[in-house]
Image: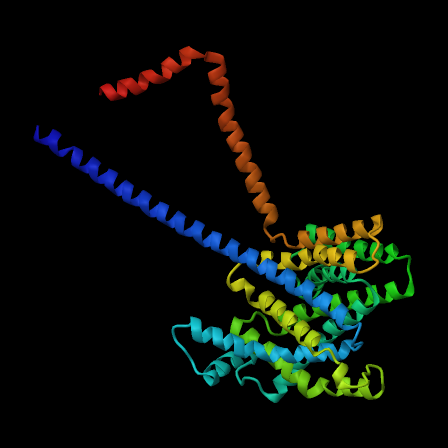
Length: 398
């Protein structure tokens, strides 16, 4: 009798342990699901921010050129705002970090990104200056293209930079070969050709398309060279690097807008007619876009951020439809779809094929498990149910 009384105790202990273990698993699952939901929520917010800032800056640039025909001066003016990257990052560090550092301490720590000696004059000219040139060329070619062709074509053609990044990474960085990304690159090239054909190979459209493709190429070269020469950067290091580009812009690029002004290539009669509101608005939107693009990964998935760029294409298309004389013929629409599809294919992770195979295998296993049960119920009918109930009754009897 004593044994029979004591025997349930271990079973109760096991049940309690199982309940506690189940509770922990449920809590972990709940935490994971909440974290994922937060990331998705912030992802949607970042996507909307990227889409609106990129399409907004493109449309505002188009509007600015009607009053102020100076794409290089606008590029120079907007690049100067990059100086705000590091101060804005430091404000975030002060509010978020538990161990607060002085601006000088934080600057010195971030300078290690450039090497053991920090940001020396040699490092400035060898590691920062080339990227300053590429940054200026990327923005100038993009803005100059907006003068030649509509913003829809400009925004969709710039999406090809993702394909150029893959091709350069494959050649220069020896990244993993992926068939699906080669297909995406082919789509991008086919889209460029079709976009050129859509307007009938007119001089303005051909020059505009060449300028956007050049801008996308410069952007791709910037990203690949950054990875090759500097590697990956933390948030503070990236913020400092972008602020250094603004310093380079002020010191070495300022002379070019001055020369263009006095040679009357980019000339305006007086500073009173300069649309300062448009210039500042464009600069703020471009700064917002770059902040979300570079630091958005802190709160959401990188793939969601990239979606914001491709979603700016339909936004620009709607605006162009109501504000310009753009003709959405079949060739243009197919070109937009092909380039967009190529961009989306490039967002697939490197292990996407392994995930697909695992998913298909699981589905096959589930089908095999469900089939015998379904066949047994149909073939045996009611007698089969009575057979199933008997073992359960006998177990209760014991």
